[in-house]
Every structure is written in structure tokens, then in C-alpha cells.
Amino acid sequence: MKTKIIVLTPVYNDWKNLIKLLAKINNIFKIKIKTKFDLVVINDCSTESYNFKKLRLNRVNKLTLINLDTNVGSQSALAIGIKYISKKYKEKYNIVIIDSDGQDNPQGILKMYNLIKKNSKISIVVNRGQRKEPLWFRFFYSFYSAILFMFVGKKIRFGNFSLINSAHVKNISQDKDLWSAFPPTVSNNTDNISYITLDREKRFSGKSKMNFFGLIFHALRVFSVFRYRIIFSSMIYLFLNYVIFFKSNNLIIFLIFSLILLTFNLSNLVVYIINRLNFVINSKKIRVKIY
Image (cartoon, rainbow, N blue to C red; front, side, top):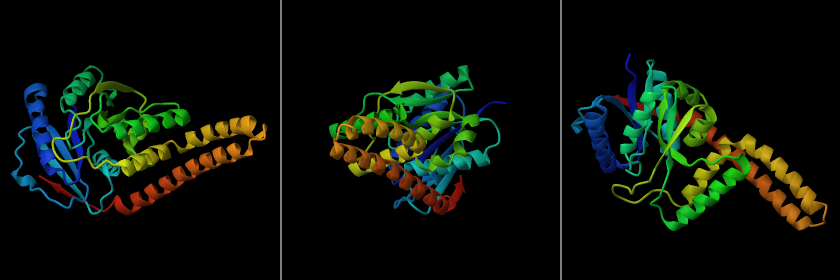
């Protein structure tokens, strides 16, 4: 039996960009892949609306619109979409996850599709190559990546853009940390990942909703997924801090560094608890429409 393809995308008011993206995806499936796909759109409590009845996509078998009653952010919206697909689809499938603003080049779908045709047991994620974001964003993103490597021992250069097979979707959907952040949850639950690298494109239109505080909160969500590894690393760093500074009577440096480690770990725990509470409250507040 042929493996079903499902395209999953979250959207918050980016309807014009989403429609342009879907037209490009439809053409790729029509001309290059030559098959149909199911489409699942997560409407993250948009304040604007779009009438999907007038949408004409001849390569879409079924369009499922999941409307959320609370704005939860793209990561949590994806978690709801992935859990929905895992529950509703029983046959073998692959999920293509893509952002709706145009920064993920839809041509990457064809590359991932060709790879998974050669090996159906893998999942594929897209590492971010050249970025189009402002300099300040790239600087702080590099700083966040360095901290992640220091405490976790790995770099996560990929975002949402990916192709995940149904076996891995099952594992990912059962991980409670999926509500916090998609990329680290994939990293923790997928043992057979293939990587491709694509440059990030500019948004089709409008301005990015990511700002400085959004980047910080995203980093905290990622760190919370790795909270146990960070605790272990912090214990090692605390021991080194004791040996280097406390024993040499540099008490101020010792106390400052210890306080930073304690605050870091407490923030991870708080973010994890908040995300779990939000999941319990919001994950069932959905309204599903099928076109």
C-alpha cells in the first residue's frame, strides 16, 4: 500500500502567505512528485479568518482545519497537530511539517521526498543554512546555540521544516515535551535522522513575529526539554566552580556562578511546569473542520 503524505502547517493570521505557500506545494505535488496529499492546517486562534471553501488545490485529498480557542504559539500548535494526526491516521504515512510564512522553501519537500523513497525508515530534518534575519537575531541565536552545546553536548540547527515517518511520529507524539518545543523532542525520540541543509528564505510578505523576547522564550522552551541533561552538566560545572574558585578563596565568583546555574535550572523547571499546565488546559480546546 502506498504511503500517505500529510502536510502540516501552523498559521496565525498569515493567511495570504499560507495560500501562496500552498499553491507552490500543490504545484510541486502536481508536476514533480505526481501524487496527492492530505493537508492539516492549525489555526492558532487567528484574529483574522479565511474561507477555505474557495481554496482550489487539485492535489489535496482532504483538508483538515483545526481551530484553537487560545493562541498557544507555533510549537504548541504543532504538538496539537501531530497528536491529532497520530490519533486519526492508522495507515502508514509521512508528515511534512512546514511553516506558513514562506521562510521554508517548499522545494525542500521534493528533496526530502526523494530521500525517503530510498529509505522509508528515516525521518528528515532541514538544517538552516544562510539566514535572512537581522544581525542581532543571528548573534543571539549563535549565543543560544553555544549555551545549548555547553550543557547538552549537541547542536540543533534545524527548525520545524521536516519530514517525519509514522513510526517516529508515534514516539514523538507520546513525549510530553512535544508541547514545549518540536526540534529537541524530535532529537530525543528519533534514532534514524537524515539531514539536509537549505537557506532560510524571506517571508512572502509582512514582518516576522519573532522578537528578542520571543527568541529568549523559545530558548527557554528548548532548554526545558533537556532539563535532566542540563542538571547533570550543571553539577559538573558546579564541581569545577568549587575546585577552581571556592578553594582559591574567590568566593564572589563562586557565588555568582553558582547562582547563575541555580537560576538556569529553576527556570527550566518552571517553564516545563507552565507548559504542562498549558497543555492540559488548551490541548482539548479545538474545533475541527474537514473540507
